[in-house]
Image (cartoon, rainbow, N blue to C red; front, side, top):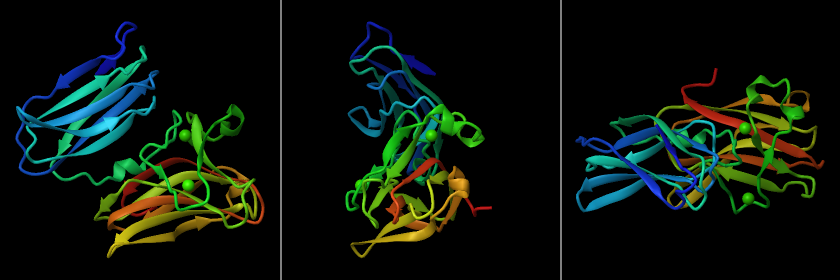
Length: 270
Ligand SMILES: [Ca+2]
Ligand SMILES: [Ca+2]
């Protein structure tokens, strides 16, 4: 299904309503979404509980051509969903959706961990503010993507540039809150420009008794194979109300640490 935004339809919307349904309890909506050539378009999903009460459950606005599965918690009182494609003030392009499912358990949040950064977005990751610099989204040049099949269609990645930083300075991005009763394997590709440039770590951050605990020993490396793109896999233990973080720490030499194609799956890393 594709909501196309024609030339004359700025600031307008297309609404699609589901059939009515009854849920036995809280549920999880999953929908595949792809944005085409319009960085003002927004997809919103509302749950309707009765004729006078509806609630926004999902809002996506990132320009991302690659299909991505989004998920949203739905209350057990929901009886209908509506999908609203808003054009914003720019015209042209549109929003495509596919594979709409409702699963009868709360969302795990795990889907929000996967991000390929393509289209220049951090997906659902956010920059930490208690660190000393930020990851930046960079565009691939054809040259550095060549010969790396896992990066063939990649147009963006994230980079921690330590050139103008001092040793020990750190930058982190964090996933949204996750709940997982089973282990998961986080996989990604990474590149560390040379020895002593720094350390890339996978962290978990959780709240306990009102205090935040950060553990960046989940996985860490100070080199990548031939200083080039290398596959990394980090085993994430089951936990409640936690975030996954990617941290780069500047070493004694200025250089860049890069990450792309972050995905996750349930189970142990092979
Ligand atoms: Ca930061
Ligand atoms: Ca990418």
